[in-house]
Structure formats: structure tokens, C-alpha cells
Image 1: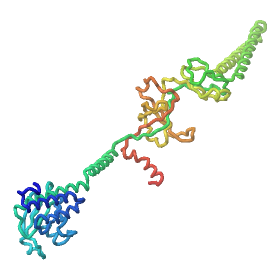
Image 2: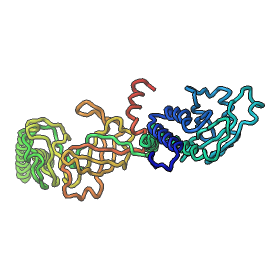
Image 3: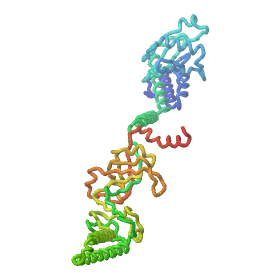
Image 4: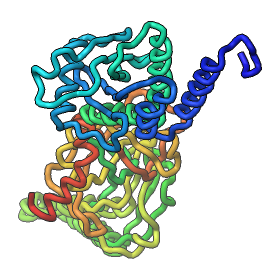
Length: 448
């Protein structure tokens, strides 16, 4: 209905206009404090009310939020304490969902002050009565015709209070806080997930059980007869030594054998004419045998001046220029003959990996030539004591073998290829795995 409707009395029209204006003010309230001020003061334009009190409810506790004609309501005053007791006495522990009415008939008997209003009406907020309600008091009893208006007032201010409450603490913030708690809980739970201790170390592909061609005697290398990394067959000449002394020894030994043979022949012919010569024949035969042995030894030494491959494989050595003219000792390795199909991994493990170097430990090898295709291997053996590396650092030398499925790969890694090996050790909680380095630094720095 509009203001032009003649069927609506003037008093009713003014009440409706005041109610709409009051509802508009409530909807425009910027915060809960302003809304409480409007709720306990402005409804007096609609009805004759003594006091209007904003009652807040949280669980089973009741508090007075605001009161008519009061800027600040002290909740510790005797009046506030008495009013809370009255509300509890009439409402009980349950949350009322309908309007309640009572009067303060025995007020003078239990209090030391006089309350000017006898009748009270409590209208719970709608649609959420658990938030509280509005308490109306006056000196005249409330009529049934006024109940819809009072209920409407509680509905207006209850709805606005709910809207302002969620505005001050939006659902999005609650969701963010819940996500923070959830992420924190997941982080704590994840810190107990067992993960293997891993360490990285330089690695190199080497031959598995190669044959080392060594110097048979002390001598000087004249030349290497095959280029580095050449594939050779059995009997291929590999190394030639300077053989001047050995060749001369062989020539002298051969001449001594010829001389001893000639002396023995001469004595054998003379023995037919002179009997005293016959006893010397045995001595001459021994000298001939000794000369032959010396020649055979010299010939053997001369043959060793050219080393030949005892088996087929790759002839691995650094460079011919590094070996030519070099003096070597007996047993010194010169060339390594390796089978390219039989390889293993040599790992230079740092000192902090000592506990992880256990036989059978899992290893993942990332080669420099193929970093996107790691190779799986298992640790075969490792030194108990660290060794000094050429760069001056100390490290454990460990060896690993490729898994059986990796050995059948078409693109098997070449001997000499380098990369990084990731060694997996014992399992520890994820939290310790993340904090182990800071803990180590703190202990080493401060000794805690």
C-alpha cells in the first residue's frame, strides 16, 4: 500500500513509514556498535517503550550489549548483574525461539534499588535465536497487537547483526584460516614420512676386471705400437722397449754357445787319439749346455722387449707422448686391456657419505652425456678408509655394478664417461632430512 491509499489510517501509515525508515537505518549500519545503538533507541518512535536492551548470547552465557539512553553499559553494575539473573531465571538453559513475557513483581524484595518498569518482553533474533535478542521493558503490559511489530524488529536487527558479523569475519577469511591450519597439519604429518638419505658424488664408468699390461723388467719404452682406445686382438704388438743391451747380450750368448760347441767337437775328435782328453769331454758338454741356457735367456729377454696383447679388448692408456722414452720399473702398468661390454661405476664418495656406503645400496647415475636418462645400479664394494684424490681432497672409493636390465641397453655407456651418482642410504623422517644440514652446521659451529 502507498501513502495515497485512503483505506489505511493515518496512524498506521506513519507507523509503517517509521518501520521502513528504521529498517533502512539498520541496513545502512556500518558496524555492530552502530546497529546496537539504532536497535535500543530508534524503536521508541514506533512504540511507547521504557528500556530496550540488546542481549547477546554465546552458548549458555548471556551478556548485555547495549541499553537505551546509555552510551556505555557497564556489565559489572548491580543492575546488569540482576538483569542477567532475571533473564536466566525466565529463559533457563534453553534458547527461546518465541517471544517471552514476564513482570518484575518481586523486585523490591530482592534488590536494593527500584526499577521503574514492571513488564518485560524478550524477542529472540530471527533467523538465528542463538545470537540473542531484544529485551523490551515498560510500565504497561504488552498487548497482543504489538507482538508482530516487536517480532519484526527482532527479525530486522537479527538479520542485520548476522550480516555484519560475517562482514567483519568473512567466510573467505575463515576458509583461508582453515586452509592454513590444514596446510600446517599436512606439513607436520609430512615431516614424519620416511624418505631415504641421499648424497651426490662424482662418478666414472670404468672397465670391470680389466687386464693390465705391465713392464716385465726395468727399462725404457721405445714406442707404443697402437693408438689409445684402439681395439686389439690377441697377439697384437703393443709396446716396444729399447732393446740395445738385450740384443747385445743375445749376440754374445750366441757366440759363447758356438765357442763351447766348437771346443766340445775338437775334444771329441782328439779323444780317439789321446786317452787323457776323454775326462775333459764332460766338462766341455756342461759348458756348452750353460752357454745354450745363457743364449735362451738372452733370447727370452730380447723377445720381451716387444709386449703383445694376451687377450682382445680396448687398449686404454693416456697418450703415446707421455710414455715414449719413459723409464719404467718392473711390474709398472702401461696399458689396460678392457672389455667394452663389461663395465662398472667408480664413485668418489665424500666423507659425509660413509654411513650410506653399504653393499647393495641403490644408486642412480646421471651421466654428463645423458642427464635425462639415469642408470640404476647397486653398490658392490667400498673402501673403509678415505684416500687422497689428485685434487687434494679426501674421499671413499666405491664401486657399483649396473642392474641386469641396464646391461642389455643398446646405448651402453662408454668407458671413461663421467657423471654424478646419487647414493640412497637409510630411511629417515622427512623433517630430519630437510633440517639435517642446518643441524649439522649448528653443531659444528656452536657445539650443541
